[in-house]
Length: 164
Image (cartoon, rainbow, N blue to C red; front, side, top):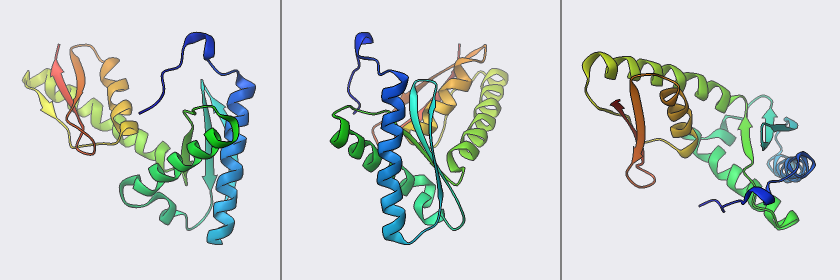
């Protein structure tokens, strides 16, 4: 679980960029060990540090359903914590996987919202990662006539979409 951050503890943009640089250094070392080529970009998007790895043959770093990507993100967050002492909300994307997944999830959420509005019935989606659930909740929260909540425990936690 992520640590609670008080408003007076919100990281500055410089601190967030430092977190993305530390994570990028860690991931660059990992790519070297694995003898994989990839370009690494460090960014700050909104209030989150972000690292993107772009290149060929990176599917193994994403893994089935993004599971390896999630694990690498946690390792990169630990590297940031070890170096800076700060808990990080770092987001890692490899080969555009998250960007593509976000688009597909938005389409799923829109389709599900329409179905719930038309039928008036509750729809339970398949279990998803925290990232995936947030993508769906964001679309549902922006849609009139429906609401969403998560239910269940990891790794079987899922989004439930209900009429308002």
